[in-house]
Amino acid sequence: MISVNPSGFACSFNEAALENLSNENGGKKNFSANRSRRGRFYNVLSCMHFSEPIHTFWTFTIQDLQTNFEVSDGFYSGQFQKLLKGLSLRYKRARPNGLKNFVWVSEAQERGNIHFHMVTSTKFISVNFVQNYWNQLVGQNSKNSVDVELIKENSIRNISGYFAKYMSKSHDKDFQGKGLKSRIIFCKSFGYSRNFEIFDKLIIHPYRLQKIFPDMELKKVTKKISEDVSIDYYFLNTEKVIELLKNSAETMGLSKSTHQRQKKLQKLLENF
Image 1 (cartoon, rainbow, N blue to C red):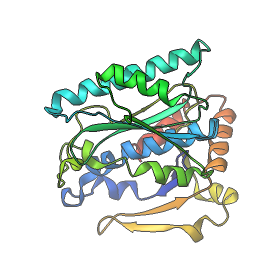
Image 2 (cartoon, rainbow, N blue to C red):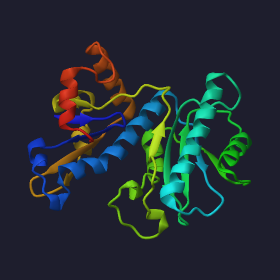
Image 3 (cartoon, rainbow, N blue to C red):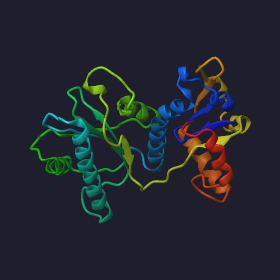
Image 4 (cartoon, helix red, strand yellow):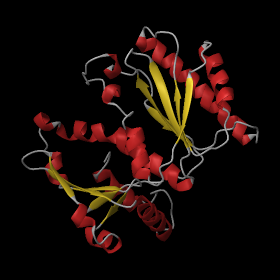
């Protein structure tokens, strides 16, 4: 069987062999956990782009040098959530500078300060309005605390690659890197709005998948994890995959993977 997620990423492997994956090779628990956050991020980003094409890329920074990361990360993350909540409320009330669909991540700068990146499909938001709002929330008077870039890419894979470089390993407690940019982030790593439908991954037979993607085997990449475990990776067209997930949910008469048999199968490949 093959696990397919909304981003068009699919994988096939031996579940029995994965259960016996040694600690030297990461163990099943760590092996799965290391992929769960990034995998979920790709899924959400793909679903948002499928709902409404991603339009802009935003960056929110802090002027003063940050100290006591374990405490201050939580504070700045909380203020960023207030910003998103406030802008989202403006959208619901049909007021100017309202924010609808978005996905965000948190990251550390070279100097150690936490900052936030966000992509959104919402157009016509005043940068000056958002910057003044953000400065007020974090108690600063900066003229360059908010930056916005227009995303010209149409491919969700290119957008994912552009955004994924900010999904660092610094959120993992056991990660050890050099410099403050690799430090642990003591708050939530990413989040998203709830105005678009999220499709979960689908467990599907390879032959059924090949009918939709006849050239999938030609683009397969195999990675050896240990002596007994190899994983086949496939990179499929995102739009076609989401249509497949959507149609599968409708065929079962249920949406968003609520079918019990499907959920049981998905549990076998949990976090991939």
